[in-house]
Length: 86
Image 1: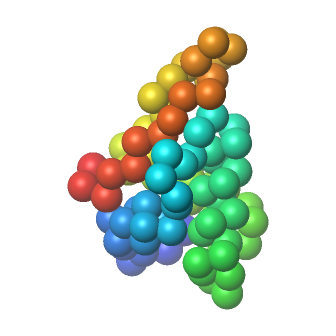
Image 2: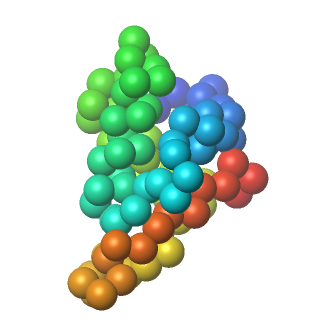
């Protein structure tokens, strides 16, 4: 369960600062990388499932956005846009 008092903007900014230039790339690889980064950043606070749900929440609320189409192989390796100002 994701806490209502979790600052998604700050969490997105922290996530963006931890990722290297051009990361993440690819829909599933990108989601997995962001989940793993959240686990590293907040290892005492999130389970792996909670981190996955948090990435889904960030995507649903527009903080992270995949710039390709995961259903089309030719654009499945597109980058993500990560914006703490969603």
